Amino acid sequence: MLFTLLLSAVAAAPAALQTTQTAPLQSTNTVVQPPAMSPQGQPLPSGGTVASAVGGQQIAIGVDPLRLLGSPQPGVYELVLNDTGTTWQEPFLIGIPPVPAGPNAPLLVVFHGWGNTHRSILDQTSYFHEARQRG
Image 1 (cartoon, one colour):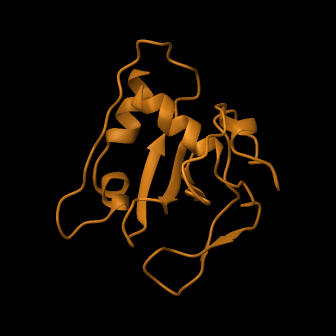
Image 2 (cartoon, rainbow, N blue to C red):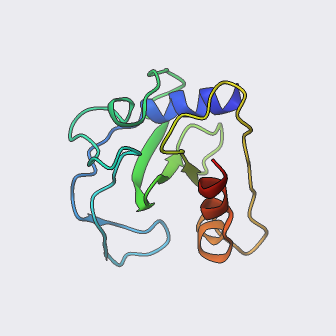
C-alpha cells in the first residue's frame, strides 16, 4: 500500500529533467550527469509525467508535492518531497525494479543516520544493488 502511494506520488512529479545538469541539494556547484532514465532504459519524457516512464497514477496531495531531481544510477530516482507539513524539504531515493515484482512484493525502507544524507545509503551500502539482484 505504501509503495503504491509512493509510486502514485512519483507519477505526480514533473519530468522536465531532460537537461544534462542537475544541482545537488546542498551545494551550489553544478554536477554533469546523463538524463534521468526510466526502468525500461528510455529517457524520461520532457514536459510530461513520470507516470509515462514508470507507471502509476497522478494524485493531488498539495501544490507540487514531489519533484524528480534525477537518476543517479539505473532504476534509482532522486526525489524531493515538498509537502511535508513543515518548512522542510525531504530528499529521498527510490529504487524501482526493472520488472514489476507483483502485488505481494516486499517493500524495503532504509533510513539514514544522523550526520548522513539520503545519498549515504546509495554511496555507502549495497542495498540498491542487492535489491536489484534479488528481484
